[in-house]
Each structure stands twice: as C-alpha cells, then as structure tokens.
Image: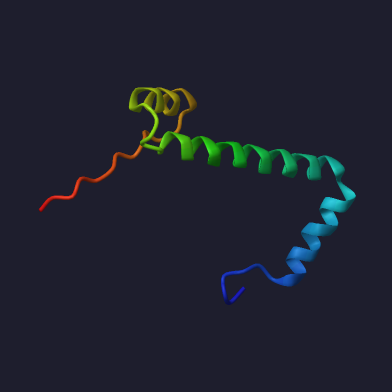
Length: 75
C-alpha cells in the first residue's frame, strides 16, 4: 500500500467475501444508494439558487452541515 491504495490481494479478498455473503453485498449496495442520496441532498443544500431558509432547515433536519454561503468579492 505504498501509493495509498489497497493491495490487490486485499481487494480480491473483499470481492470473494461479497460473492459468498449476499447479505453483505446487499448492505454495500444500500450504503452506496444512501451515499448517492446524501450527495444529491448536499448539492441541493449548497445551491444558492434555492431559498436559504429551506436549505438551512433541510440541512438541520437531516443533521447535515449548514449551507455554505458564497463569499463576496471585496475590492
């Protein structure tokens, strides 16, 4: 793991475990789906085209960080 990436044998071992444990594969699939939803939500929360109150309330309700506010250019 000299370059920061897992060793090929480690990756092969994980792949084997996923093949032999369908419940683990299902959990990994569900986790990937949830991550995708959170990514989409975070994109919406940080989109200044939407109302800041709605974005802030949604972030608070979901336990996500508050929306980023755009930095104003100062001359």
